[in-house]
Amino acid sequence: MLEEVETVLYAARSHIGLVRPMNEDSYAVHEYRPWTLLVVADGMGGASAGEVASRMAASAVSEDILENLQQADPADVDLETVLRHAVQRANGEIWEAARQNVDLLGMGTTLVAALLHPSQLFLAHIGDSRAYRLHDGRLEQLTRDHSLVAELVRRGQITEAEAEHHPQRNIVTRSLGTAPVSEPDVERIAWWTDDLLLLCTDGLTNLVPTRELEAHLGSIAQSQRGWTEEVLGEAADLLLGLALERGGQDNITLVLAACGKEISGS
Image (cartoon, rainbow, N blue to C red; front, top):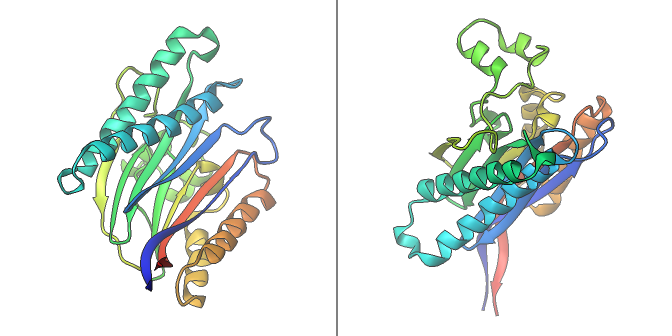
């Protein structure tokens, strides 16, 4: 018998941009039924090191979460602990790899990871890659940037408008792989069926500010009766296109995710 069941739908895009010689961003999406893991990482370190760090982070987090979810009774899993452990493992692997290879010294990466269920959301992040939630037409940034300008804004020393064009806006104060221990922010987030999740690197948000992301995504949500992979793909293409039209100075990576229906049964 066929029936409609709720599932997590997504669309992901990663682009080198129009200036950088290589794409140092990475992303990963994995299904661990009933959960879906979404990861976005923005590497740094010069040469190929940033690419290595972001790829290692996405891989290590994915592997660690899969191992922990497979070995435990789902009812007993503390997902905040699972996420924290996965990010800490990624940090250790990147740190050790850099110590063993002089070409990788100084490499690191930002990371934002989400474990999403049709009725629940858990987030882990470090650095200035972001997570947003669109709820009832309002786009809210769920993560707090670990960056110099974000700290200046929180202290009231500069405004958010000034932060958008600050010459040091790309300096992060916390990242993966640049210290032997690096602690992520991990939390459970309220989630509703019609919400939309956006994970992205600063290659998008430096060129398309939050208020504009809200206008575009809110308009798309209002025009739909529900999220589909086709609609998510069109929205992802729109946001990527906006960043490229404005110069694409950095790599651009984004993942959109929402809950939708799929046919299940026989």
